[in-house]
Length: 48
Image 1 (spheres, rainbow, N blue to C red):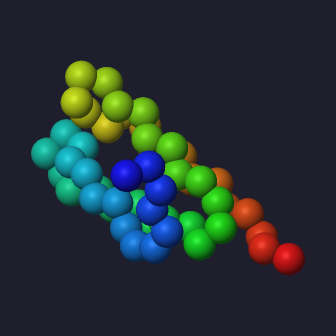
Image 2: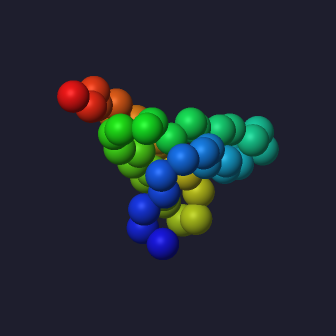
Image 3: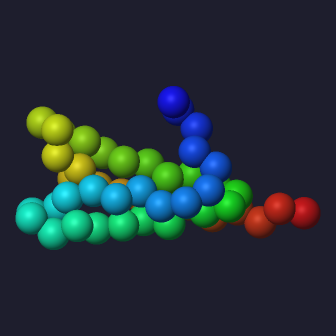
């Protein structure tokens, strides 16, 4: 699956559970190194 439309992404970061809400219109980018999420970036766009 390469597309998610609604909801949250949960991941473990240094023993702490983190969450990122998926924007309704926009992108979420995860950088993963050695099986560990090292960066999360969200970009929200306005729908006209």
